Image (cartoon, rainbow, N blue to C red; front, side, top):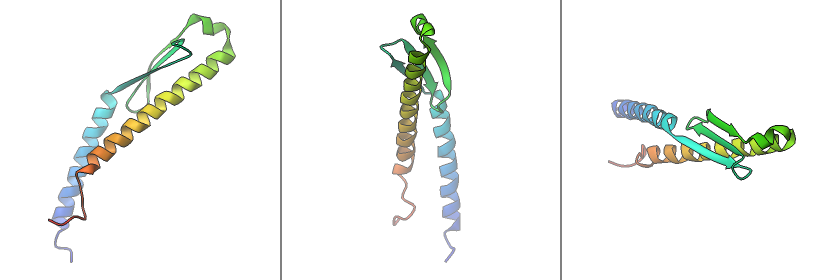
Length: 102
């Protein structure tokens, strides 16, 4: 009944290695978005951490517009990161079928 525990252990080790590699790849990616026709430029890494932000001087006197455009840029960047993470995870798991026959 528990004869293939070794196989399961190897599979879990492989998953851990793949997850660590995926995390490194995500951290090295950069996603950039523009909002308000380029008045706000935001760059995030693959983990969703903001790594660069540029705000046009014209927006500094219009707090409401600045807030709206900044929120839009952050949301767009977060969507890009989440889609990339999902695609990367599906790619990692796509070739594995733990329930398949040998």
